[in-house]
Amino acid sequence: MIKIVINGKEKSMNNAINEITVAEFEQLCVILNGDDEDVFDRYLKVFGVLGLTDEDIDIITPEEFIALTKTFTDEDWVAKEFKKTIVINEVEYTAYTGDEFKLSVRDLAKIEKYIKQDKIKYMGELLAIVYKDLNLDRSVHYEDAHIKAKAELFRKHTTADTILPYVNLILKDIVTKLKVNG
Image (cartoon, rainbow, N blue to C red):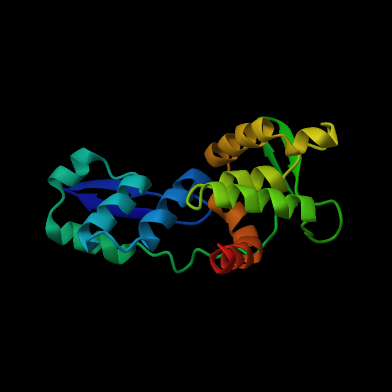
């Protein structure tokens, strides 16, 4: 959590990986990895995602803004723990049942499909494929409508520390292969 002072008033903004939702993380990745923005515009967009309002932007001084950019960091956005289960709205979703996470070829193929469809917004779908409600029939897990609905649920109710281990393990390999083949 970043504590800042704008025009004499204290304000808090999420900054830690366990405070940022998957939806916010997707937006931040696009902003931070883009190279078409000026530095000030980029940080305005980053802080907008993290909670800086238009009103804040209108009154923040250049000195306060520069101080804010110095407090923001994505360097400690590290999460290595594969969460075996997550619970959203009293429903338990399970990523794996053994001792460690193993991705099935079927899951990998679905993830690859969603990355190809939208190289920017796919992390919710990735979670929706990896985490399954074991009370449902197996065939439901791979239906596109089911994945899309779960993806939106995970974007809103799951923090980025849940997705990062999967991104690091799966996506670097897939995205690299897609760039080579694609």
